Image (cartoon, rainbow, N blue to C red; front, side, top):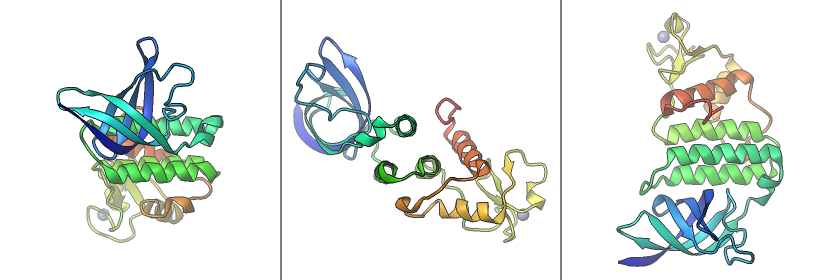
Amino acid sequence: MSRLVRSEGLVLRTRAFRESSKIATVLTRRTGRIDLLARGARKPGSRFGAALEIGTEDSFIYYERETKTLWTLSSADILRSHQSLRENPATLTVLARILKLLYYLSQPGEVNNRLYNLTLAVLNALETSKASDALHDLFIWRATALSGYPPRIDEGCIVCGKSEAINFSVSQGGFVCSEHSQGEKNVFRLNIQERDILVRLSDVPVGEIKGKLSSTLSRLIRQYARYHLHADEKLIP
Ligand SMILES: [Zn+2]
């Protein structure tokens, strides 16, 4: 039994299949990460056109089969092409890293609409913003939280509750006071501004991100994500 379904989705990667087809891995709102077979997609003048470029958001129509994991794509209409991100080497690198992390964080059949919405907001902002490094950091920070590892940053020291905690413990996932950062590995020493920026980064509207994060904050975010997501430096440089 197969049925025709429609879902919005984001193209994460594609690979060649047989002589003239492509398999696109897509993160959908409906069924999480899926593989779609696009017949004839590598033929000149294919009806899929540019809809299967990585980072494109499309409205997909595909045949869902209960017994198969590779489904057949019927049509793909572009909602947001994000073309400008692929034309610039700097944003292309950020785009590729975001999509790679998203692939790692998503599963077939598992829907995470908040992660989907975050990704779209970041890709849309990247098109007009000059703050591509900060947006990349924001994505890593929030994607880690939305994948089940939210930092505890709305309280004081996570050990004793003391309010003047400004050091951040990667393994404990929150701020620690000077007493409770003694002897701890993986503690980042922050100043007040860095602490406030880190707290704001969790809920500031994505479009308001400007400038660049300090190198300490950028390293903290990446180390936090690698530690909790069990990721290596190839996935999160
Ligand atoms: Zn403490």
